[in-house]
Image (cartoon, rainbow, N blue to C red; front, side):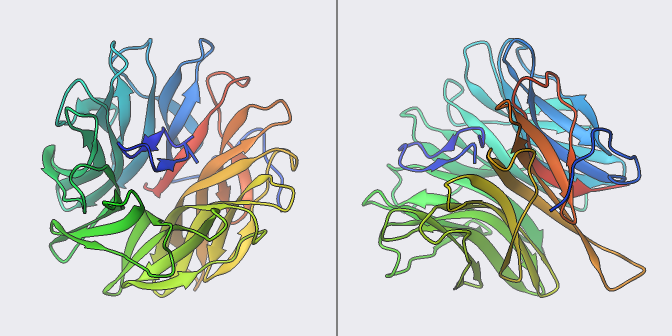
Length: 365
């Protein structure tokens, strides 16, 4: 699950979407690697979690009897910033920001309605967070927060839903990517630059499209997402400065959902979940358009690939690719995982018989 990040209209649901594993993670394998996600306790309650070098830290919530999840993170020096949501006693999701484990609540349009923090970026001493809140009618509104102060973002149709999923800062400008809804009810990929919205509209995608990931590199803006093809299946793409590039799928007749994007120089890395010919959802990533499936616990069970961080090695002209996601066991439980250069490391959870997922991965000391 992707924490049920759904637009207020309910028309768009963002699915809260060959190497062996290791039962014990060598400390050196994931040194300096931070992961945000969730696990489930023995009572069946979803708990936000942070893993550092494979060691889990459960994050505080508003009400221990209600669920929460850590959906994104950023690391600067020794400071670890995590965002997501935590439900209050009434079951309302409250957008939350954890600074070194201390939780803060972010402002919303209507405290009686759900809100979720979805992405985070650091710029100097400033913290930028993307997400959405709902108005009094329950309609989702995209937003970003700078150091806790909220800016609500425009939509093509104010009466319909929208969500901001990623935020980046470069050259003093704030870039936010997300998905809005047109007046006809179709999903629309949108990007806001200093609050000014640009919608990516394509005459060939008359069933709509989603923007799910954002990155900036060498003066260019990259969006990753999906469009609804003529058969009604999700098909992966990315846009560089608005120009669309299609991505292959494991089976052209089956759906694929993009997770995230990271661009290093001119190299484009994108994660996603692509259904096989058998219809099994398979974690995968694309490097410069070449699709590479990732290992799973059980080939007959599903998995997902969500976040990505590409680390450039200083000593060589090479990179390490870290991907966050999950792999389902033969018993049906979802196990949070990190893949390093294709090698999967399963992360410790509260209860091995319950579900967990890793959403985002980042680097630090």
